[in-house]
Every structure is written in C-alpha cells, then in structure tokens.
Length: 262
Ligand SMILES: [Fe+2]
Figure 1 (spheres, helix red, strand yellow):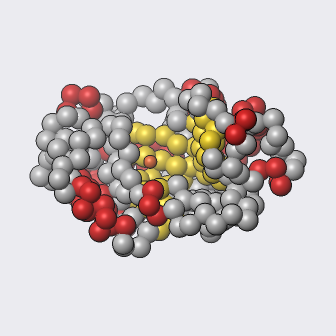
Figure 2: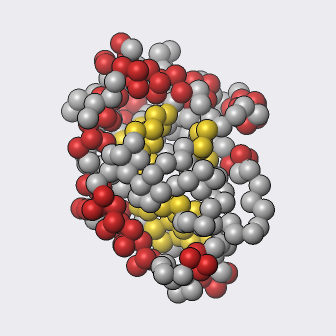
C-alpha cells in the first residue's frame, strides 16, 4: 500500500488523512482482549450496560499505566508489548505511509505505543459537543496516528480535527516542536473553535494520520459501544536537537522530499 499524490496533498492541506482497512484483524482482536485486563471490577465485557460512564468514583485510577476517570479510560500498560507495536507503529503499511510523509529511513525506531485509549458511552447524560476540548498536543513529535481496533460509528467518540488548523497553529508557537505558544495562540484557537470540525469515524482497521500541530479533541461517545483506539506518535531522527528552535518559514521543511514536492 502507498499513499497517492492526492492523499499526500489532502494531508498537507487538511492536516490529517484517514486510511481505511489497514490494521491486522488478528492483532486488533488480541488488543481488544488485552484491554479487559485493565477493566474496573464493575465493567463486564459481556454486559454492554456496564460500559456506560462515568467511571465510578471508587474505581477511578490516576495510575498512568491504567488511567480511568470520567468517561476516559487510557490503558497504557500494554503499549510496549511486541504485538501492540506490530499492530500499529511497525505495521508495514502504517510505517510505510509515515516514511512516505517524513522520509525513508528517517523515523525513530518505535519502542512503545501510547496504549489503548477508550471513551465510554455517555448513556442518557447530555455530553455537549465536546468542541471546547480543541487542543494541540504538548509533547514533541511529527506525525500522530490513531488506529481503531473496534468500529467507531458517527457520534461514537471518533478522533475529531479542525481541518487546516495545523497551518495556523504551526506559526503560533515560539518553538518548532515543544509547547511554547506565542501571543496569537489563544485568539487563533478561539477563531478555529468557531469553524467546523470533522469527526473521523470509521471501522476497526481504519487509521487516522495527523500533523502534530493540528487542533483536535476526543469528543463524547453517544453510541453504546466503547470507543477503542490505539495511538502512536512518529518522530523523525534528531528531533531533540531542533525541537526548541524557532519554527521554520516552510512548515514542511522537516518532511519528506516526496511530500514537499506535492
Ligand atoms: Fe491530544
């Protein structure tokens, strides 16, 4: 599988790209099984009614390896297991797409993925739009990937982006990859919030690629299914050396020749 010129152009313009039917079904099934090792006692895999959030106060956890609070459940414990790496970061297609965007032999070797990030169903509560959660991630990386290991229907908490916002936000930081917003950031964020967002729903196997400065959020889940996604952040070799430098004039300076040519 390869990204077409049109897909690379879409990524440059919009700051994200959805690729369908990418992940390995056997590895996804294994990850879905693994998730339940971290479930709170009251949540049962065979009882859909028990999946509705929020997490009960007595079952909340601030342990970073298995953080459970409100409607979010971030199971990071298996992130370094070989099958999880192979599921997402070193999947030949995912890795190949990332190399096309960033450069052949230019990616840091994946050591662990973030883990399995879940959004629990809101049930009968009114969750609001969740748009206020629009943010840019604070840690340094080049290219994010969100892979769905279970179907995420419309309204199901799919990764949500503000298309094109990466082009504005790229200039809103004093540094190229670390989180040092300048005076324009807050105002731009408020303007972008008024623009329409795109909720990336999809099937298990689908993957969303996204630029490190795109505005995004994990919106509420209005369906009855748990939103289950695996996340990884691709970094180019040498990132630490230039992450604190000023943003480049050409925002694609660090990306592949193939992408810059488009
Ligand atoms: Fe984020």
